[in-house]
Image 1: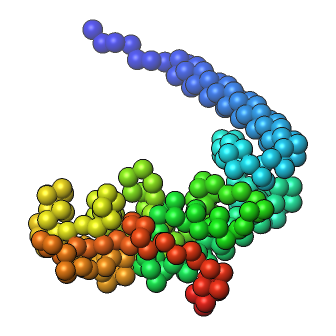
Image 2: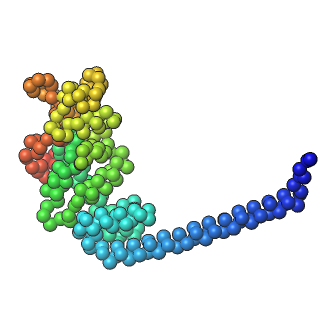
Image 3: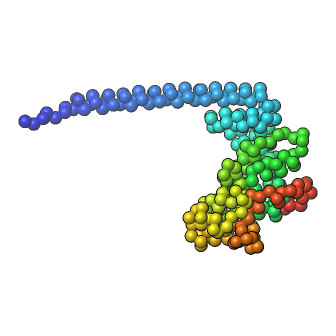
Length: 258
């Protein structure tokens, strides 16, 4: 026996039902989008009211500023995205991070002859605070990271390299790949690294280790100590503190500027 074919009327009914379901789905999606948009607008309005009410605390308290930035991020608002508009006029955060960026550049330039363009976030924080004076607006390490990320957008050679539980700030346009980053992380403990250290810890061949270290030397990010016991030590000046016993004076910072 042959099965009866589906009639034209049944096909038409099926297509009509599908069209209605699709139309209903579109209406529901549009309603949900409208509700979400309304909620988002309300959240932004409440955020602006919150910012207006607490603007002094946002400016002066670094921890409160971090929490406020996180609140903004949840709805895609970036108070640092523009130097104009509500956020800049109300909070002055655009000017704050611009000025902080300038201070970061000045400190990194002043220390470049010592560290080759790499500095720990802690050391950068300490030097920036020294330069700002006792009565200036307080600055956190989170503030520094946000300002550096803005500097990265300008293509100034700034970068942030995770090392252990902290960060190294790169202020020179050197090409650093994952191999270089891993070696920097390995050097964190002692402030230096050797070819043997790299071979033992990373299981690399000698040539690979030497290529990475030679690149760090060429870029001025490492110093070679041939008088060290055993074998050559490659020191990372950004990772040891003896070089920072001297304070950076304002005059030294000015002389480092181009």
